[in-house]
Image 1 (cartoon, rainbow, N blue to C red):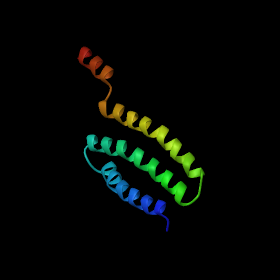
Image 2: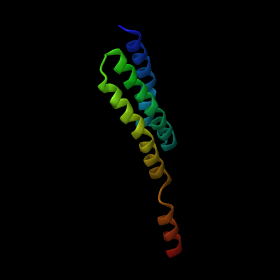
Image 3: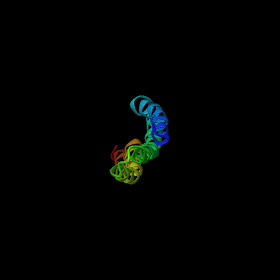
Image 4: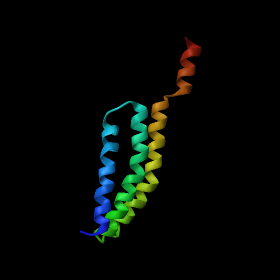
Length: 93
């Protein structure tokens, strides 16, 4: 077993609490877990790419690095609600 795979195993151990918090917890805690899981998964794909000698996993890391912040922004928007809709309801009521 190479050092890359040992590092990937340690990285996946860090990912477990993130996934647990994504599954259960307050919405703010879930948001923090999603924000942390993005870079951890990206690093995991890079470590697996080197450890297993699979360059295509590096492409997955690139895609993950681009999409993870977008997922965090979407979750933040859903957590914040729709302020325009709420303001219109207050004016109508």
